[in-house]
Length: 133
Image (cartoon, rainbow, N blue to C red; front, side, top):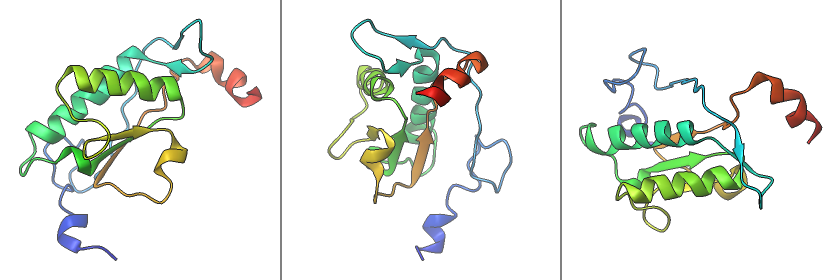
């Protein structure tokens, strides 16, 4: 029900693996990490890849996307924190009128022109742990 020009505007983005399909699945072989004071998981390599996509969207897309048009969803609060820190270290505005980074609960009822989903976990042997918890 949105403006068709806006809805289809990124279907020809030059960084898409398949033109016309505005969807990228990017596997990361990173480390699943936790800090001693938190049970929440994060993945530094995935933080860096998220930052790479944000930079492409904001600097190499014509017209460039505004930070407020980008949302990043992750299931872990610690990963959201690490992504925010990574983006801020690159001078990217986060929160408020900037990029929204948070868990799925934070995004309920919201929309962004681009959504990046960071699943964090990259070790197949931990799937059983995730199912139990």
